[in-house]
Image 1: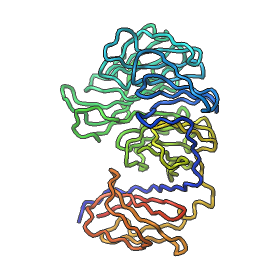
Image 2 (image 1 turned 135 degrees about the vertical axis):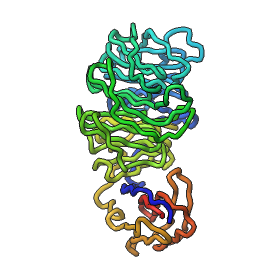
Image 3 (image 1 turned 180 degrees about the vertical axis):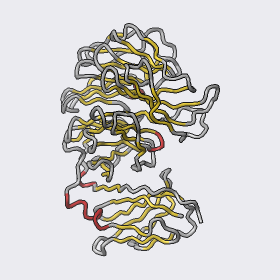
Image 4 (image 1 turned 120 degrees about the vertical axis):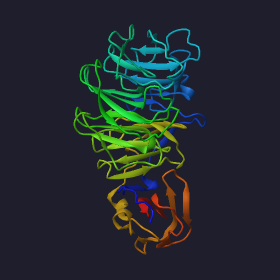
Length: 415
């Protein structure tokens, strides 16, 4: 008997005909991986390799180029439509690589800090035009004078922590995420979250895992942190992991709504209503992650790394191109959940066979079984209701059922 893994009861459902993401900018090479939506018309997106910014003021009909400085790998954080901050990287920095704007990107001023070669994907967060925190590899720094001076803040003396994400609810309360390793070790072994209630002067650990094994490289880790109010927030990133808090970040629950790929970005409008970019796809939940709707663009091809929703209707996403939605990406109507209501898989856990319960009036086109790395281990091109699992190793898999009008999926356990 193979070892039984824990069940993950999350349904993924898609209906392509209702997915309405329109491509408004085409770029097929390196991904455009950072963006901010200010209104239905104004959006700023990090350009290829983060060497410049793209801006539209007319809803994607035209785009202009913004160049804060001679840097790459730019990340940005805006506090409103006028005031924003950008971090960049230069192999040999001859001056500051942090910049700020107070006129929506028309002009830029240098801040008094240069990023080091160890932190090419810097995190930062500003709560107003003067006060903010930046991450430079293992260092956390704070400014209270709009970047004229920065002071280092000590996170912990226990091990080494490479900072991946920063989020502040107000001037004194914030959360950071790190990848950590033991002092003197070359190997990163997991994720940590820390919380401050004194503006970053001191930090208390509020979450830890050891999911990375022994790894000498800095991978994605938990890099996305977002709160929808003072109590409710999410953190997500590598290994498809999503954490949730309901007490202001004092403790975190690991959700069963995990994904097969790293989570590149999250954007939650409310605690129940949110979007996730994972594996190049966009997923939408309206019930606190009980179910996920897989969304698609008009060509069913998009490869998404960043999301920025303005409200339930208007939003932009970016990756290999820039996409816009005017209806929340195409939420399913009540009629479209018919397969959800009728599709059942049993037994689960299973050993030798899977039985699919789908009405005979809904013919199945293909059946695919994939492991959590995305590798297909079974593919059936016929209308079948019984699936043999003989010879399949024990573990957790994703079963995809394709009909003429729907694609539904379930996570199953083989033992």
